Length: 451
Image 1 (cartoon, rainbow, N blue to C red):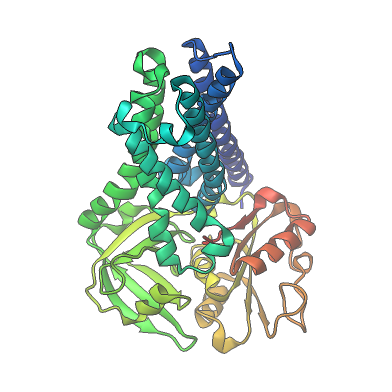
Image 2: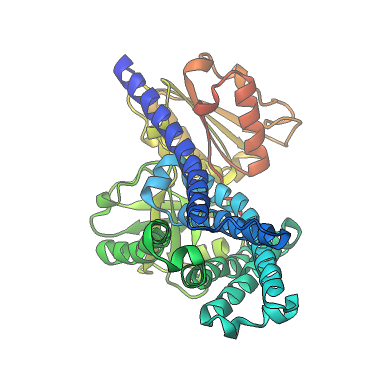
C-alpha cells in the first residue's frame, strides 16, 4: 500500500465526517432560519399570555416541519445522503428524529387549536371541529395528525416487536401520507407564507428538495433501473447450512456502480413477495452477475428459496458504505457472524493484491457457517489470514473455548480498519472490543439492518 493511497483514504474519511456534521447542522440552521422569517413577518406576538403560547405553537410547528422534511430526506435514498453516512445510519437517524418530530407536531396542534379557540371564543373541541371555517387544507392537517398518531404508537418498542416487519412497515408508510396531507396547510393557512416573498420561497425550496428526493429516488429510480437493466433471477441454490443463494442477471449491470460489501433492497415480483422489499447484501463481488445469499429469518426470506428462474426483480441501490472505499488504513480486519458473512465474503474477493487482510468467522459449527468453503478458498488465494471461531457462545463475542479479543488479532491498531457484520448485540460487542483495543472510531465500520 503506497503512502499516496493511505493519504487519499484519510482525506476521504475526513470529507465524510464533514458531510455527516453538515447534514445535522443544516437541519438546525433551517429551523433557526424558519423562526427568523416568522419573526421578521411580524409573527412574534407578545401582548398577552395567549399571544406567547400562540407564538410558541408556531415556532414548534416550524421546528417540527424541518425535522419531518429531514426524516423524508434521510429515507429518500438520495445518493448524496447514502455516500455521506450510509443507508443504515441514515435510517437510524430517521428513526430517532421521527418520534421527536411527531410529538412536536402534536404540541403545535394543541397550542394552535387552544389559542385560536381563545381568540375566537370557542372551546378546544369546537375549535378542533371548525375546519370548515378555514378550508379543506385544515381537514387534511387533521387527517395527517391521525396518521402520525398511528405511526407514533406503532413505533413504540413494545408494540413494534410484536408486529411482523412486513405489517409494521406498511403501517409506517403512513408517515409519508401524513407529510403529504400536512404540507398544504403550512402554505395556505400560515400567515408567514400567504404573503409570499422570501419565506414562501425558502419553505418551497426545502419541501421540494425533500419530497422531490423521495419521489425521484424511492419511486422513479427503481422503475428506471428495472427497465434499463431487466434484472431477473437466473439460478436459485439451496445450501447445506440452510441458506439460499440467488444469482441475478441483467443488462449493463456495470452501470449500477455497485461495490463489494454493498446491498440492495430487493423486491421479487413473485407470489408472496411482490409487496415486500428486503435488504440483502451482495455475497460476491459484482461483475456481469449479482449474487445474494439469504438465510430464513422471517416470512419474506423464507420464501426466497421458492423463487423460480426468470422471476423479475425490482431493486433499489446499491446502498451502504460497508466497502473498501471507506477504508482509512493499510490493514483490514473482516469480522462476521451468521449470514453477516455475505458482505465480508464479497469484500475479501475484491481485496487488492498485497493487502494485509485478516478474516474472522464466528459460527456454532462448520455446518452452520454460510459460504465457509468459499471464504476458505478466497483466503488461500488472496493470502489472507483466516480465523475460525466455532462453538457455543461464551462471555465475549467469541466462543467458550476461545474468547473474542481483537487486540490479539490486530498488530497495528492505528493502521487497521475493522469491518463488522452480524447480529446486532454480537456486532456491538465486537465494535466495543475494537475500540477498547485502540482502533480509531472512524476505522470501525458496522452496518446493520435493524428496524
